[in-house]
Image 1 (tube, rainbow, N blue to C red):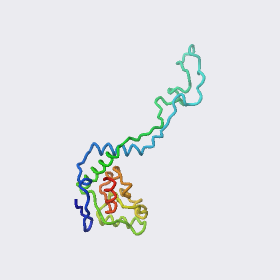
Image 2: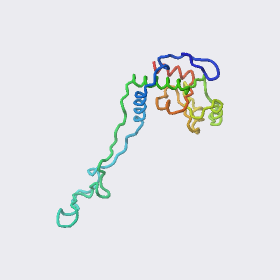
Image 3: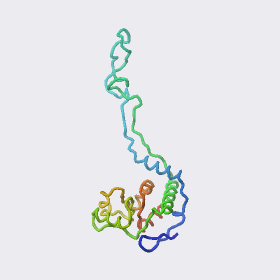
Length: 200
C-alpha cells in the first residue's frame, strides 16, 4: 500500500497493518483496559472496626428512653465508620498481546480511511518555542493533533506543552487512547516504520 507524504513523496506500508476493518468492540475493550490501568485505585475509608474508640457501650440497653446503641463508632453516628468503605484495589484488566496489536491495526487503518493519519518525512522545531510550533501547525491546518516522532524530541515536547489539544509522543509511546483522542495524527516516516514493527 502506497501512502502519500505531506508535501511530496510516498511511503510503502503493509496492507496487513493498514488495511484492516474497524473492530469497534475490540477497540472499545482495549481502550477501556488502557484507561482502567491508569487508575490509581488508592481510595480508602474506615469501617466501624477501623475507627479508633468505641470500645464501651455508650449507655445501658434499657431504661434510658433512647435508642439502643452498642458503640459510638457505628456508621449512624457522627465520627463513625463508613458502611460500605472503599479499599485500595487494582483496576487493571488483562489484555492479550494479540488483542492489543489487532486493536492498534484496526485503529490506524480507520485513521487512514478517515484521512486523519498524516505522514511526513520529518517534523521538529529548532528550539523549544511554542510560537514556532504553532506556526508550523497553522501552515498544515492542524489544531487538534497528536505528533508521533521516531525518537523523543525534547524541543518539540517543550514547545507543545502550552498548546491545547496538541500532544507529542514517540513511536513506542503511541497507544490506542492517544491515537483516538485527537482529530489528526501527524506521524514521521521513521515512527511509521517503528509502529509497523510493533504491529507485525
